[in-house]
Image 1 (cartoon, rainbow, N blue to C red):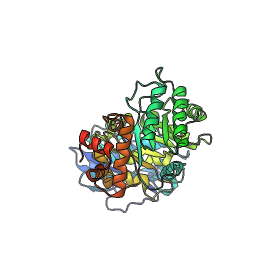
Image 2 (cartoon, helix red, strand yellow):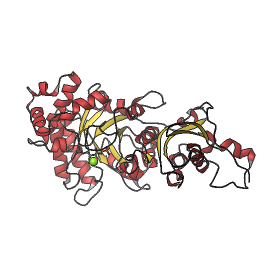
Image 3 (cartoon, rainbow, N blue to C red):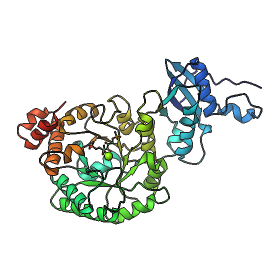
Image 4 (cartoon, protein in one colour):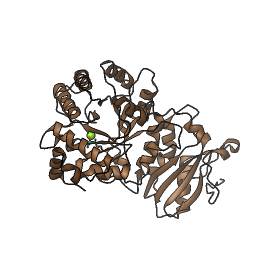
Length: 411
Ligand code: CAP
Ligand code: MG
């Protein structure tokens, strides 16, 4: 049986014709062998030589291993390996992050990054609103957006949810959202919740404060656009989707459907199942790139190493992947969330910059003065960071921030 080499070490990468992936590989095999196993399994090969090769096609389709540096393997997949069906993330994912994770030859393998050629990027439309569109809707051109997640996660009635949103807005927050596990439970039906939350937002607007609340429409694939249309019809001005549990296709369906005219806040619950292990799985970066491609308008990227969740560090590329101008799409609003409280805001802004949405659930609802005071504490912390004033100094004239700092400390 003929053997075929996927090794093209030292040959230049060609990001115009190939999808370029960086894998972190842990193996007892020589690295070349492990890299070839990945290239073969994910493109034209299998575990043994085979008799069914059609060289006129086959020779163009093999993945190329162009570099091995330490434990990082660069593999290029020819653009022809990908479906001619426009914008097919499932097929892309099964090439760049499919069977390889189960290969016995590898102790661990992690997809760290992916770069797509123009021919594939052009198949996607990106966000309809993005960071800029959300800022315009809120009349907030420069300051970081400041939000909350209604807490408790589950267990509030529609009335109580709306009351929370009103109090949060009265305390100065620009954004709020349903939590990822709340969609349409009997204790808080989505129609009633949406209608009451919209009333609260309208009341805030009539009092001179603009605020958005993302209603979670995460549901089965065949119903998600219909549910989003309903929620929009009940007055919602932003929706939320859990991208991992619903799939990239769900975000894409919502973003590309002409009837959906509101921004999409993208949550990433369950990502920790494959992003957390530094030696195995998929890093957040490729997922962030895909969310931007399929049209998410705002996306959780973690708290850059300061909050309750493990994950994003300041230099993990996710901010750049949301905001950078190296792709032909609007920027995505990066959302820093997870264990945030006013004492962390200064450091988050230092790491993330000002084009960011910072949000706190416990860090608002847990304030000793209640939700409005908690919202004021967060807003004051964001104002201080925006103005470049240390939070302790700003807290001298801002009581709610002072109480938050006493309660939770600062970094
Ligand atoms: C934050 C949050 C978010 C996490 C997700 C939560 O609440 O609502 O889901 O931020 O984090 O339930 O934990 P708190 P990540 O502000 O009360 O922590 O995107 O990093 O997975
Ligand atoms: Mg949550």
